[in-house]
Each structure stands twice: as structure tokens, then as C-alpha cells.
Length: 336
Ligand SMILES: [Zn+2]
Image (spheres, rainbow, N blue to C red):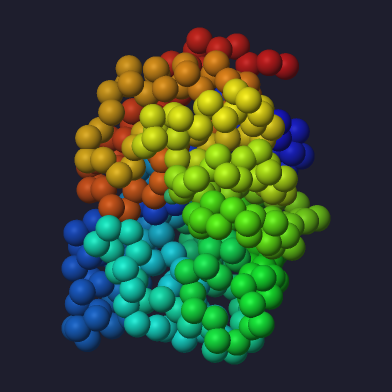
């Protein structure tokens, strides 16, 4: 339970805090602006204006819906790994490779020592935070995932690459904290891809987080968690953000055997489906979760980033989560 830590950081959250994983769909005007920018029709400055407009839209929308811990929506990012690679010495942009389904991204190539020269995400975090009183999460991609999703032509092996990237990510975390960020999310969607490398991923997360005054969340997409659970609980994070709904809550069976000892951002709507769940469905999932998890430890959010949904679907999904959270708060008297 990490309520104590949040208190120390002066972050006051209700029971069942509602958040989201990170990415939001881009409104039509921003999709248009990104296309125009690629074709040279508008300037970087003009694109930036539209990115800011979309970021403000999502901050205001999350507030209006009643989300408790906000995200900036990543309106300025394409792919989560390529974004960091484009901003770091040591990386070059590689050719297009397929990630999931029919989505393609430029797989970065590490051709030299990866160096952190200046903050990458702080300016956008600050911009988003200036538009709300609610806490905005700092959003980073974790060292293991950046390593796994890049080609390495410089470091000796995967572990050396991962640990070098961890130093870079730590600098970015420090810069976010320095700017006033209290909740930092370090995404590791590749966490369960190679169970034999879990110790490397954990060592890297320690290198990123140890001794730093922030509440840490890590999002991992659905994978073969049965191969890394309960060992993954050794990660120095306060909160794991996991896809639960997409797989029919099957991870709850693992938690029954070995209790989940951290806070859990419980993916309670399927972010891969166009269908917006009704409140009853979300409430039923939460009730099942609470058979296994202490209420105090449960946060609620969509399974994964919402960037592949339409704006209306994303809003619909967040709305239904907030409704379910409010009903559950009314029904659960918080301890202490
Ligand atoms: Zn995910």
C-alpha cells in the first residue's frame, strides 16, 4: 500500500483514483496538422500550436469527466520508443518495422553511447500541469522496452544496453521531479516478453528509481505474466498498471495464489475495442477485483493507451470508469 508515500508527497487522492495509461486519440485538426507538417505545408511552430490546443482539450476533458490523475495525452508523440530515440544522441532512426497488427514504426538503431543532454518530456509535462490543479503524471518509456524495441550496434549486449538506457531515463525522472512532478510513470510494455530477462529489467528499474522522491507507476501491456509473476513484484514501483479486462480478468487467478502487494492501476475497460462498456460491466469487473485486492490499493483506468480509439470512444470509456469509481466510493468506506 502506498497511500503513505502519496501523503508524504502531498498528493491527496480519493479511493479508487481514476487515471489513464497515457495516450489519447488525436483530434482531426491535429491529424491534419501532422500531415501538413510532413508535407512541408505548415511550420513546426504551427504544428506545435495545434499540439498545445489538443493537449489543453484533453486536460480540460479529463477534468470535466472527473479523472483524478491526469495525463498530457501524448499529442506530440508518434510512437513511444521512436519519440525518445528521436530526441537522444546515440540513436538513429531505422527503417519501418511492424509492431502490433498493422501498425508500423521506425525501429531506432543505437549507434553510439546514449546520452542524456537535456530534458525530453519536462516541457510538455509542465505545459499540461499549468492547465490543471490535479496531478499530471510524468510519462516515460522504460529502459528495458526501449532496448527491446531498438536495434543495438553499440553496446556489448542487451543487458549493457538496458543499463545504459536506465541511466538516461533516471536523468529524465530527476528532471521531472525537479520541475515539480510527483507521480512518474515508466512504461515497460515489453516486460514479459522474455521471462529469463526479468532480472535485467528489474535491475534497470532500480537504477531508474532508487532513492528518488516520486510515486512510481509502471504500465505493462498484456503478456505472459504467469511467467514473471510474482517475481515482477520485486520491481521498485509503487503501482503496476496492467491490462486486466482484455483477457477477462484472468490475472486475478495469479493474485489469488500470490497476493499482489503493490497498488494496481486496474485496466477496467478494453482499450482495443470500439465498444464502450456500460457502467454495470465496469462495476462487475471492479467487484471481482475487490474479491482479491484491497480497495485501498486499487486505481482504475483503461487497459492501455487510448490513442487507437476515436475521441468519442475515449471520452466514453473514461466517463464510464469515473461513474463506476464514484459508485464504488459511495459503497466503500475508506479505511483510516
Ligand atoms: Zn499497454
